[in-house]
Length: 263
Image 1 (tube, one colour):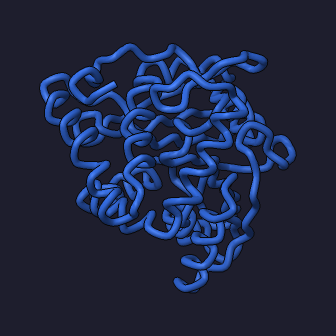
Image 2 (image 1 turned 180 degrees about the vertical axis):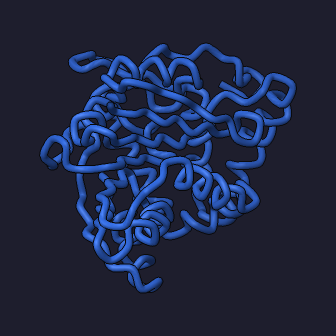
């Protein structure tokens, strides 16, 4: 499927793959859940070393502002506990660590070993030492009601069974806690043609030149189109058990921050 055939308004699934289903999507491809998990791992094994540089180039540095906005949406107090899923190179974990202080805890996690190692090294270089856990967001190795905040930034669209991950986020939250989901979303309609051109023409080219991997950044563009839009994701979070869900569009809907609260 070419860029011209792949508008932002292309049909999206109402949800991620349901538990026990036999097919899901990897970008625009129809694959088994096991195949998606394997191929997503391959993408991040490939791009881990250039991940931060590519984020800066692709977003013009805006990803740093998006992350700060998300972190500031939910007040945190010293001593509280935060779980950062798909934490990658540790940008959110570092910001959270400043807020909870020496008496708090931020657990930095990722399913991908290469990304987790990049994040651990980057955090240590910044003087931030955090517990790091390699785990699957669909089956978290943490007790119920363990955290005051759970976050996932630019990772949910890569999860094979999104409903399971959202339910797990809800399970490990304490009453009064919140979940943050920062993710690419559905851009405002007037910007869609330009956004499609940039996504399917420019991003793979940058990926080919800088990361020596055009295919992974073509997958990035496709995975964004296949991810649930703002209202659909909010409904999924409500079905996962969150008592209240709000979302905030950033940069005309290029990304959105969803906040799910537990009362």
